[in-house]
Amino acid sequence: MCYAIPGNVKSITGDLITVDYFGEERKARNDFYDLQVGDYVYAQGGFVVQKIDERDAEEILDTWKELFFELKETDVKLSRLYNDKPNLDKNFLKIIDRATYGKSISHQEALRLLLSEDPDEIDVLHKTANFIRQKFLGNACCVHGIIEFSNICKSQCAYCGISSSNTTLKRFSLGTDEILGVVADAVKRFGFKGIVLQSGEDPSYKSEDIIGLIKKIRNNSPVFIFLSVGEREEAFYQKAFDAGARAVLFRFETSDSNLYSKLHPHSSLEKRIRYLELFKDIGYIIASGSLIGLPGQKAESVIDDFMFAKDLGCDMYSFGPFIPHPDTPLSGHDAPSAEYVLKALSVLRLIDPYGKILVTTALESLNPQARRMALMGGANSIMLNLTPKDYVNLYDIYPNRATVDVSIENQIADALQLLKSIGRAPTDLGI
Image (cartoon, rainbow, N blue to C red; front, side, top):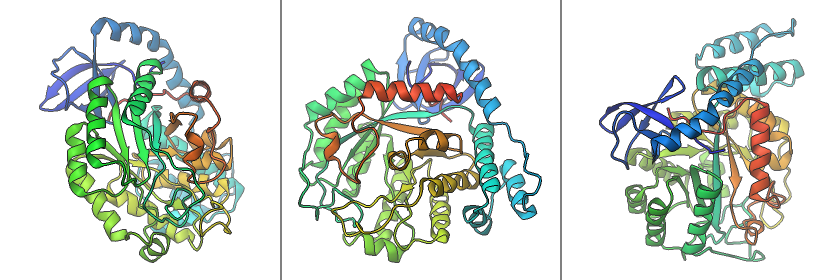
């Protein structure tokens, strides 16, 4: 099964096209192909990533058609909202009712939800978040693959296991040919349409090497390219976009400037924000977020981070739990509970009905059922790890990472089984 559905081009206005999927229409930007009305394309992240032959497209659509509507029916059934809790607080219900209509909730209202310890309220919160996700975004679930190509990092983030201060870690850096092989396998063998290239802030991997890699990927494999390579010279990101990259995964980690400085002695929050503004100016799809449960972080700060990310105009949110690494300055602190993080993600869905919310591997590492629980609580994006098995354990940003010992074949099988059971289509239909 492919991780995108081919669609038929219905109209073209400049570089913006309208694509039809079984009667549903979406918009996508076309930067790479000469298209005409009637052509078939794959879109990912709101961009056209591949033009596909009509006969091949119709064959794929024929296999998808019945399943497409089957999944939608299951999703609608599982996301129905009903209140069988007659004694809920009236103020809580007012917030919930307004959110179901897509109306914005305030910082104070979001904090009220996050601080709730009432099991009935939390249950309704999760169900409401799932209802809102289905109402405004449908049943599409982005399935991206991530390749961690270097664990060399010059930064000294106080929570991160690949920090330059961790002298016990064996370092690695994949060569261009190795990365191209992994990408080609992911695209041609497994059908991935979105790939994240992630590394530490590795000074040995020159910017021109990454630019060259992007160009080779675009020439060899039709795929949507995410970059997650940290703070590099500003000109690099324009060149990377020109080469074919279209998204960045770039967390701000916390919107509290004082806390940020304590955790990142090599950088500043102001600098981090400048990068995010640069990405938006260039035209990147932006995925960003912070850590939940950092030592000293209050619930108010979590909501600050959510509001901050929304105000930045993020297209995708990546909020995951802080997990202490034994070889970092924060090793003596505790991780938050999975339940707290799941509750926070549901609050985030009420804050932004339209953004994509990623289920992070870190959350899955806290609880093996967290992926399902998060998807049923408002999330709609997952990532599968494509890093070669000889290296995946060395990308040790936190201990006991989920799926590092699971083959990509089994990761895909598990993900597809889960998505089918809850009515989600493993595809990104555009915007």
